[in-house]
Image 1 (cartoon, rainbow, N blue to C red):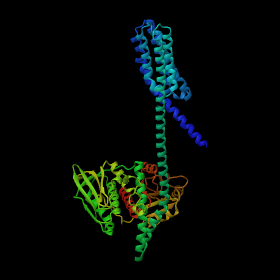
Image 2 (image 1 turned 90 degrees about the horizontal axis):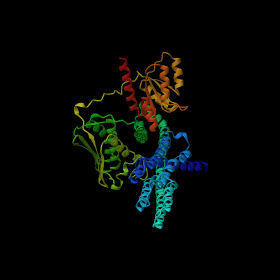
Image 3 (image 1 turned 90 degrees about the vertical axis):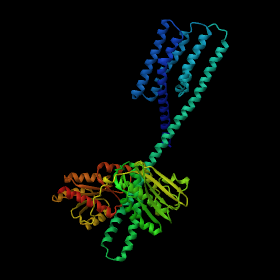
Image 4 (image 1 turned 60 degrees about the vertical axis):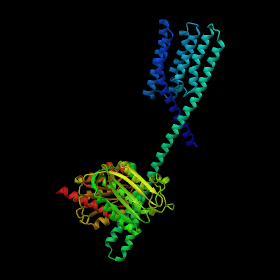
Length: 579
């Protein structure tokens, strides 16, 4: 109850502050216009003696001074007074402005000719009308401002001889009533617009908060799931390498498929988090599409063969300028989607030349997509033809990732599809130059890793055991620790021990991170050492933090083959540096 009342009070205070700020913004412009143009106009319309002009321009100068000090103080030294005091002070220039118009009939109406009287009335109403939109943020201010000049005009008229008294008084009364009613209508409109604006701001803030909470939940859930999955992954690989019974091959294959399936789902969440964190920076290179697509064909052909689908890839030996990893990811997601929803016929990848662009089409003869659904399929977690939420059909993130990766690299993406006929996803990539294609360095993953002396930091006993076992099988010297403090104690006890690689989990006990652990160990070693962070987090903020720290980042669950490739490259760089 207290929180609800406090929230209402905060909303009201915020509303009133925004209302006053808009009033001050608009009134300042109107004051400046009136001081420079509106009030001097009286002097030029009604030719008056110099003493009258002196009084009139003195009032104009006084108004200018109060406007300057009030508004300068509000905009430049707002903390001098509280909000209520500023509201009271803002009445001063409005009062002086109203009084200046109120004395105009007494200064300028020297003649009783009707034309002068009507001219004075028109000028008062005109100037009042120019500020009506601004003053109507507070209808009582507008009423106060208008009443004094019209009342003064009526009194001035009463002491003048005229045959049109009833008409003049009626006209003044009607002008006052019409102006007040008009101001009330404007007030409602202005206040509704402020309310709507604040509701939109609040809705946006709530949406951002929910997104942050969702990201934190996914990050925490991802980490907790990846921890045991990482141990299972490495243990399965270790047991498989030690197994001598051929009958266990089928069992290991099923285990690996299960782990791969879970990894694929988690990696999709990770891809989305990386895009949310804006840490994916494309590095375009000249790459041969033929090489990339032959690799993808070897990966997808077993699945298409199993379903009786023809996988046709026509590359025409094109070279493109693109980030190889991101392009492969786009192809991977499009082909995975095609395989998932095509039950007969074929999947075709076509490459065509299109004026300095390479047009890529991924076609299938699958279930197709209706026109009504063709925009929605690019939304996150949106799936067609999967009402049961079968995990074999993914999370509904693949096409969302494709769209965002294409937008990131400014690759135009389009879709044409017909239900029960098939779909064609098309995107364009800049052409590359064949002479600039670089041959990738070969990594010998079968090479023994005896040159690596590794420190492992992880507070999860199962992870330490599984990683240690795998690295030991590959020939590494391994010492694992629960914390950086324990590792540092061991380093101090063994002065001749010179480890050359640190592998740490990101989340450690006592709210410490792997970044803290690696920095602590490096400070004790006092020499350069390669470092790898292993994380199961998908939070954009954490991914950004790791990127800024500059460490190699591997995401759980790590496939043993990928870990070995990374370790092989690290070992090659260590010994190349020594030579």
